[in-house]
Image (cartoon, rainbow, N blue to C red):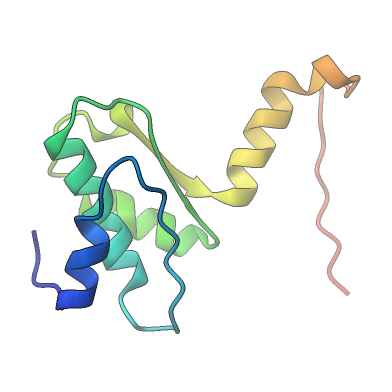
Length: 110
């Protein structure tokens, strides 16, 4: 594990059965803390269903890059943006609620 502050270490080592939410300002180390939390879960359990949701592609890419040293990390966890996860769920299961098989999602910026 990389060097973390006492507060960051508490989050990383929080009980595994306890969901956590990290709210902090930009540049405070959120991505580092969440990455180390995922590392802690993978290295200390047999869990193969770890999901880490971020808001930005940059954070998801950073997390994956920082965890590359763990064998089979991509098979054991899913690190992506909330939007990517939602899109993949809709593409895979949208037909069950009547969505077309070819789903197109458009972004509208005002």
